Length: 391
View 1 (cartoon, rainbow, N blue to C red):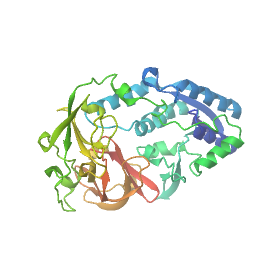
View 2: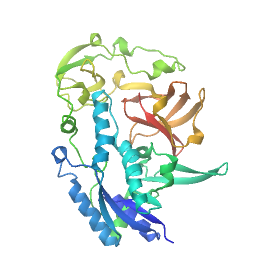
View 3: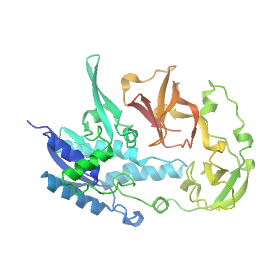
View 4: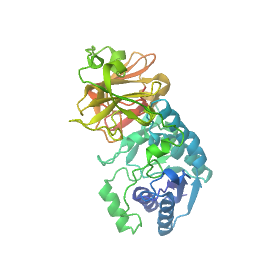
């Protein structure tokens, strides 16, 4: 009897080819489009309107001769993703909606809907791979980097569990992007030449300030420039001083001078350059810190400003997640691994230290733009084994 797979058809080329390959491999394939968004007022509609995507997904399903349906998950998306995003921005943190969308929507609500249709698996167009190994007589699922080094999307799946991975298929993980487009063209798929979406998960491209201003009130505040020679950056912490190495820079208004005004500290994130609208500097200004309580933004001049860099980060115990629970560090353990703090960032050598209060990650090289609310993911070679929310 054929195994049944429900493919999350987004209307893009990657998920289209995923569906095509699964059908070629002999699976019983069902295409399903997720509608996660109703508010077009903040969507840059000519970039990625959901209606066009839904139509493209339906055309691909018809071409492949597979059943197709759309599912409205906008209520769940609002509760689990949008509300969370607003809360995080309000608190001065920068969430990653794509990581959350995979954990909370695609491999939870969507997976449940697929199981109700009798699916054995769900499949997506992610550039990553799934491995299966035996350990102590038990089957363990691995989350592996995609073969395309320019498109590896394992980071976006860093919060998946063993149960979710057991039901997941990633048909294009062994392919390079040009190979995917070539397959789509040869198969006559309507999405073969379609541009990749750069927007939020299954929403499209959203103008973030407009999106945030739906609920976060603009509030005038000071922009303060902090000199690279400020005492805030004069540290000489020892390699074993984990707390100080992972602590954000302790910035205070007395460390700098007021150089401008902003519309709300919660609209800005560390490392941001655009949106400050302050000129007259030889080197561009970057956000190096925000204080949403005092409504202050701290900036530094130049890409090499020490305020942009940190040697380590901390993840509270409640926010530490192990994809491979069998590799979980015990309290007092340390391990040399690789990690990244954002999508597309090259993997960086680091040491993980598990303490009672949480996980400390110390990098061999200082990292630019360590941002509270974002996810750090750690790897053993090409396998992503855990992740957590940066404190």
